[in-house]
Length: 371
Picture 1 (cartoon, rainbow, N blue to C red):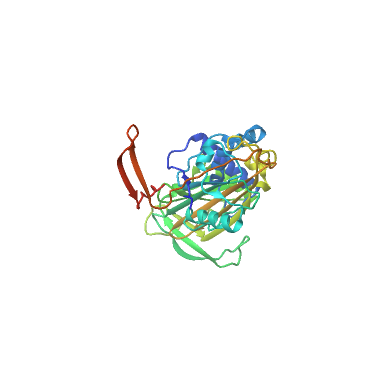
Picture 2 (tube, one colour):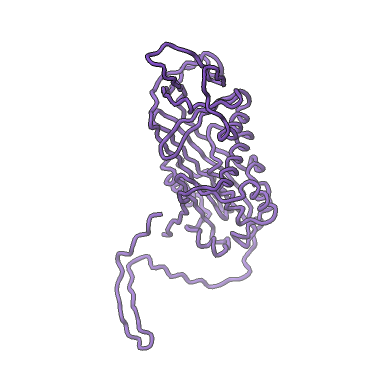
């Protein structure tokens, strides 16, 4: 049985350029097709990787979207699977393991198990389906888990107006003296930062207008919106009032519905957003293989949950690549493969004399180091 090789993203500082480029992708994606949950940070590493091995128009388009690599500061992994009939460059041959068979009954469970393992079961299946034409699959997994140092209390919300009017919603409530967590941009956009553990915050945003515009504007306002202060503050969902109390310390009351969300995204439905238009038509990717490849499928499965205790989210993004035109082999050759996958012996021999210096029989080899 082949050993599964997974490249994990190390936890380290990301560059300002990578953050800006990835956030710009988030804003464009939000503006074009807002959804209950999506993760541009799960797509970006794949786009940057493809840009590094692409050529021609595909490279130019991908570099405009993902000009620099991005190292995720959260749990993440990269998986690469290829078919034996696709010749690979030396670098990619060393990365790819195990091989795809072209049989969905075999390959499907393999890929699904990878998705489940690297998201803690939050995403149980790979978002792409491979088949006999699939030459290569690239996948990234991203998982965000954080807890609230100050938990919320469970409650009930009954909106009096708006789309949710008359509904009885499970809600979360919290009181805090940290008024700086609330920010309003130009009176039209409300941002509330919920501080989590492990350097993870969740920013809730509300605004008037088209959802995609609100969400993309929130991405742009993350670094510029000023903290709300004073009784005259106004913003969507914000009410300022003087009330009777036992002390004069200002407080911030937060009310938000509990939510769970899931979504599947076809990235090739809007290929220009992700720089995949040329990659999906003409290719090519000489850094992967001398055979011309194109992206035949690119999808993401994402989930998220906001509860009284914390926030959990995960996304698996996968691209499926196929040969642009199948080229039959030009020759046949003998290939011998020797695999020592059961107890075996060894001899250390002095070459000039043929003297056996050391010998042994291996029954318990070392386990692989955890990645």
